[in-house]
Image (cartoon, rainbow, N blue to C red; front, side):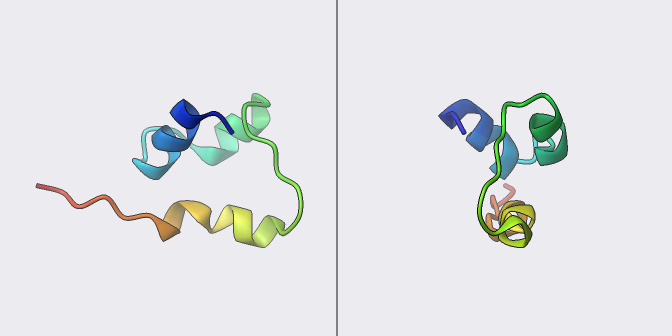
Length: 46
C-alpha cells in the first residue's frame, strides 16, 4: 500500500475495509494478520 494510505490506517484516519473495497489496499498471504495490522500500531495522544 502507498505510504499515504499506510499512515491513514495507522493513525485511524482511514478504514482498512474501505481502502480494500476501493482497491487501494491489496491483501495476500495471511489475511488474519492483515486484519489485525491496525491494532499493532498505537499513536500516543497528547
